[in-house]
Image (cartoon, rainbow, N blue to C red; front, side, top):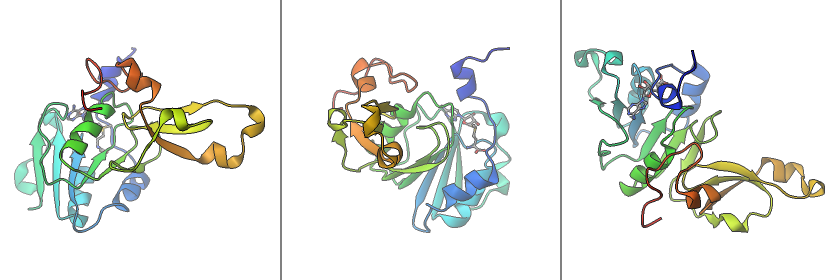
Length: 200
Ligand SMILES: C[S@@+](CC[C@H](N)C(=O)[O-])C[C@H]1O[C@@H](n2cnc3c(N)ncnc32)[C@H](O)[C@@H]1O
């Protein structure tokens, strides 16, 4: 059976303890955390032990346990993260969803509420990174050669002459804005409906 990209995105599958431990290294006691696609809350419960407050957002209600068993600082919201208005006090979001098609949507919604950090494996599809959502970015056209990660969530490599491929070029990631995917309107694996927002 071949699953569609949408079916992959909505499939629940927990991550491993190494991944969760990595996520938790970025969480401080003062953080208000939004866990997007929280599954059966196994990470959200750990987040609640470290953070001031945690919102666990999950659309599949069959995964969610009885509310009575939850810690006081963990609030479960059963809703679609694409359309549900994010709480305005969130300071750090977690998106563990390697097959996410809506990274651009979540990035913009988080910026709109002033959330500073996103801890995720969705942008590169492996590992876990902590993105500073308000980091200074250079235009895509300023990258002569090397890896880039765009404001819209797209990632890629700008090719160049092989003789210029040094270990430094191979490992550095340029945080950019206005990449080719932004300009195409429909992003390659990150979707933003009819194109990027007017204030892009
Ligand atoms: C790969 S699982 C990861 C679950 C959890 N983060 C963990 O590590 O155990 C992705 C989860 O995101 C949920 N999900 C996908 N799209 C969603 C959406 N638009 N709104 C809310 N939850 C969503 C799925 O139902 C699934 O439970």
